[in-house]
Length: 192
Image 1 (cartoon, one colour):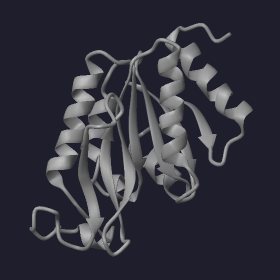
Image 2 (cartoon, one colour; image 1 turned 120 degrees about the vertical axis):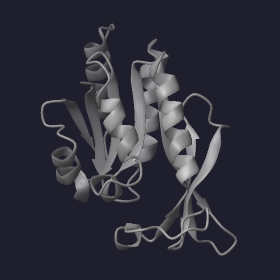
Image 3 (cartoon, one colour; image 1 turned 90 degrees about the horizontal axis):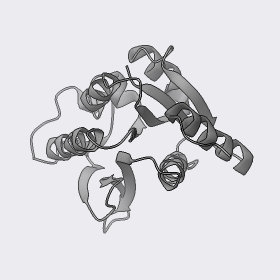
Image 4 (cartoon, one colour; image 1 turned 135 degrees about the vertical axis):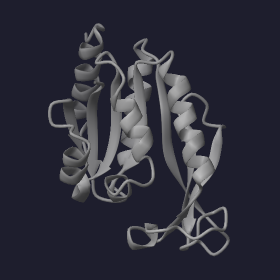
């Protein structure tokens, strides 16, 4: 099973920014980092939505979530409305998983951003996460998780024995660098 490094904290605290920064720091030390993160976008009415962005190429983006209770392809979101007020694109979720699978062929570190109540209930990136967890123990998954959902995510996905470490947001520079060292040490790199 893959190992997991968790970045967690409240909404809007900088989990995504910290997770991406962590991935970039590990990549600068010579390890391949792939996967995806979610970037906040605003529509013409200033409503918040999200685009999925590739860690390998930030110009590769797809709209993944927009405000509303109908899937982005126009069909009803069976069961999802009780969990979330956003509309999700099944095509974008599939594309994100495709990026992950392709990146796993060459990268030992994979980012999966915004693992939360959707995934706990079997929606969102849950299939991608379950697939990635099945990779070998030489792979590290960088997961960003809402703090109020951390227990549920760890429980639902059986992460107890897989966790290498945690970063609670907000995080100081020393703690951040300690996280980088922890990941690189697990990967067998030089931590000096």
